[in-house]
Length: 235
Picture 1 (cartoon, rainbow, N blue to C red):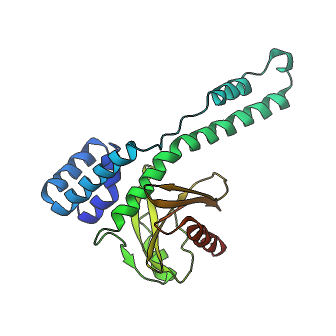
Picture 2 (cartoon, rainbow, N blue to C red; picture 1 turned 60 degrees about the vertical axis):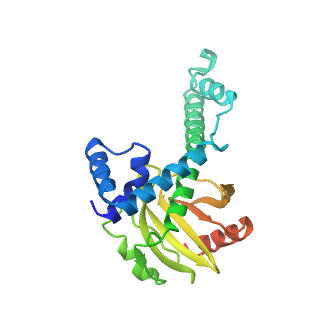
């Protein structure tokens, strides 16, 4: 295993998401690589800090009741198949919303950890270029999707990363002295742009054209939202 490969799967190893062979290979690499051991230790420390913060999402009690009520219509109307189908669709939508809400704090923690890790020497980009026609083709054959690479002047390059239990594209931008990591992967979900903060970093999250986007930076929230809207206008 090379350091570049280890960099992609460090987060998965930290969360015990690798199979036995992958875990053993990663442990072997960490035993012989001081740089990756240092990165792994930094990830461990960041995970403990995040676990100590208020990031866990607790679904409200009424949500389960709504789902149960939606999938179990009264017998009085059981024969009305269109109504049953509508209720089932509503239940499925509620389930998707709940699953997305429950997983979001974990993804926030992961993208912030990946952003922090990328700021360490030698971890920011795998392909360095301000030309989208250089960055976009570099991902071919490395991911199971073709990531969009918006053509804006702040582009610095891109790299492979690992978020939400899968390899993703990380697009790197710089506005003034602020580094911005933009993580992208396919998702069928539709939701508006949102802003939140974690451990001193701002995170903007949105969906567009079947792609999920997460932008992370230490710039202020209004500036990061403005940056994200610029990305959206160039998709």
